[in-house]
Image (cartoon, rainbow over all chains, first blue to last red; front, side, top):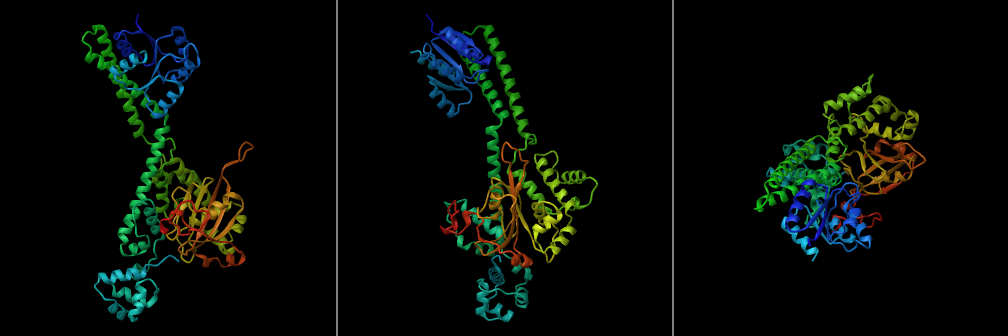
Length: 121
Length: 438
């Protein structure tokens, strides 16, 4: 059975490219673009992996990450966080909040697929 | 009195003309040993002897006797302090200024430029870090670049990509690259446009400073009785290209203040009152029913007058940040930051509404009579204490104030200009080491 991934990203062209890559790599991909109900979506789907952008409308990725880690049912979900900022303080904040892996944009297609596979073991 | 480099100049000119000390002494009608003392600045000369020596050296007497520019000395000392890893011959700075005045002026000017550039860079860097437009633009650029990179990589490296998917990705590439170029163009246009958001960089201050210096702090166009103060101000703004630039609001505020004070206290009126009250500025202020700081401002903005004291003025806000400066050749002022905390300018901040008279003596022995006064600079409310500002008027010409000096026993303060170039090692207020003692 294919591993499931929930891709939470509000830039449509990035979503399309990443979806194509992940599907081609054998993933079952669901996408979501609004931060407001992203946590509920994660709880509903319980994916094997969450790929989460930091800059989202209505609720940012850091807040969603904290929600996940505080929910016992979701606390161990691997989370790969993406950001366009790439500042040291963001990666440190994400580590403190319990991110599994942090990547900055622009990213390499090969690298993101390798990291996604790594996170689900 | 500022240190004189008269002897140094005489020696340099003598050597340039190939004259021996003996020959020059003979022409001047003085002994060789006395000439030696003069050339080493241990004796002063004036009058006939100075004229004879100047004539022998083919120069004007005034070119020999101009006092050392203490402001330039300070700037050179600050330049040395800014490079602590370099060894400079600090004790020979006056010799350097005297022997090589052109090089000294160039060094001081280069240091000034470096300071201005450094302050501008810090202001720009701070602005970039906090500019929401820049932050948003960078986010958009990075998002576009990410999509372009990922999509183009897919198209370049996928042999089995369906045609409709490839067409979609090509369309995405076109859209993203268009958006990218539009965002970059907007960003460039934003930073090419005149700065209209009142960011206060050292460049904006330097243009206003330059205006005051070029006009010698006196603006005749604003002194004339005019039906419309605003029209007079607009005319000056336009003539000096302050309009349509980031300096416009600050310049307009400064010129309006000048016009208001000039209309209220004409040059004739202040001349008459200073004579009437023997420069008792509190009495002058009471007589005019105006703020003491307005009297300070008026006195610092007068046309050059013979046999009258020369005044400098510095104004600062409650944090010590400089709001206005008119320095004198013998007393240099900081451009934006605070100076020696012992100055009455800063001490007045703790007693707004209480005028202070004091004599300041600098490490070089120069003495200045100072008048300081702090007052509210914003309306008071019950919510929060208002802001305050302080002003200090100062003059080296103490001999014009005999009655003030006799009438008031005023404190004599041993001050510096700033810690980096102050030799007063034991000062309780020292906040950084001095290069002069290293």
